[in-house]
Length: 268
Ligand code: PEP
Ligand code: MN
Image (tube, rainbow, N blue to C red):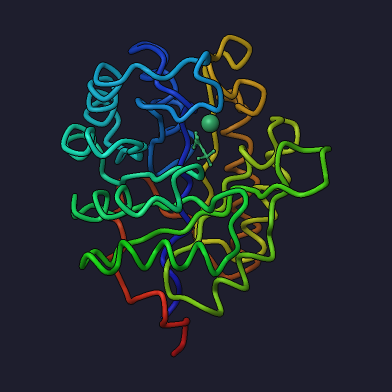
């Protein structure tokens, strides 16, 4: 049996306005994204940076889901927000800065929703898999692992995308593995090539930031693709998927059912 369709998750780093989000949501759908991302609660490195619209942002995400039919991926960063986030999210994101925070992992697991778990930028793959175990231990076996770049001495990009993580994780676990080229690159110019590399190396999908006006974005604008760049990227991924025997999941297709736990490599 082949692996499930390659999923493109796209959307702004942060939900900034109703109109902006709806514009990007429609553009993501037209480009071929199967899910919409957008943070309402943002884990910013500096407390002086924009922290997100909070519950207003969640309301805009709910509206975007109705308008486009795209399922929503949004971050949970505080156990106190779990009920509000779970009401709107189809997939709960745990950010890199919180990967190793067991109370939050348990809370995310208890929503019963799939948990998209981002690798901490100082975390080994073993530590990522251990974090996934916290979710599985709550009886939630729908965890999606995300490679989003790690900290190395390389400073030409924001982080260093560890593409080798994909085949290595594949050998260790049955869980889907997604690559986020946006946070790794930190610069929109490098995102398309890294995204295509992710498709070639066997990832189950990509999560890409896109914005209606990147230069005006309140967070991560430098790494955001324009709507046009997003559409172009998705079109160029399809031949690569064909070459590696994969197809892209089309918008509206249901999420794949959970398969097995961390300790069950593919083919085991
Ligand atoms: C994000 O997805 O916008 C984000 C904050 O990512 P990370 O947790 O990987 O830094
Ligand atoms: Mn971001």
